Image: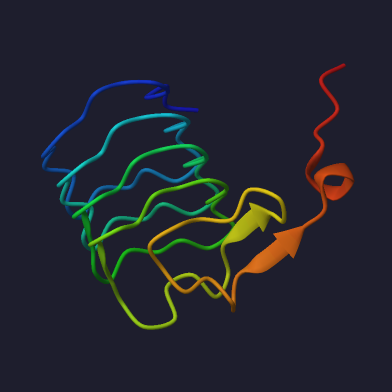
Length: 111
């Protein structure tokens, strides 16, 4: 897993990259260009994607719990296969087609 957790990646140019499974938990991706990137299975929980470009990005199975998508550019249907914990929905975007998990369903066994 690529470790980007907690990093400040403001305006990063990450377009077209294979980032599947990466850990962007609590990262600041304000204004980042993630267009056409494969973010399948990525942990974006708690990250800031304000004004980010996610057009044509693949978000299948991506954890979007608590993500701030305010002003972000997303392709229609991009979040249909994304996941979030029901008490931590993403903000700034309509995620009604994403899969909402209860905290128990989202709990990962750390053993």
